[in-house]
Amino acid sequence: MNQSKMIVVVGIVTNKQNEILIAQRTANQSQAGYWEFPGGKVEVDETLEQALTRELHEEVHIKPLAMSSLKTIEYDHGDRPVQLNFFRVEKFSGTAHGAEQQEIKWIKSSELSNYQFPEANQPIIELLMGESSCKNF
Image (cartoon, rainbow, N blue to C red; front, side, top):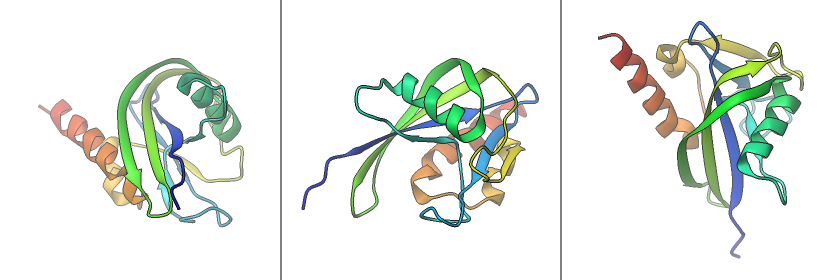
């Protein structure tokens, strides 16, 4: 059975301390207990930017004021191919909190390897950790 590709948007949200926002997947989600960057599925007739704005509001109650495309990753979970569209969000309004009862944390990019993320996120984690190590020179 050939299913259509799921389109997903993901926010790499950073604060003034250059920390990245991560959220823990809840018990009722697949890969429960894993950490993730906030985001979700793009709905019909939404642009990627509209979807990310909606998802960030629904999940962590922030509104992005500036976003830029960071990377697109194609991934196949085995049951359905996924296109992950990562955006950098460096400016937002509101105070982030787990609007869906999920735990959230602000962490340094150098700490990303201390958290378990879904496999599809590994390329972006490597990219972010690489940027972090470059800033140390």
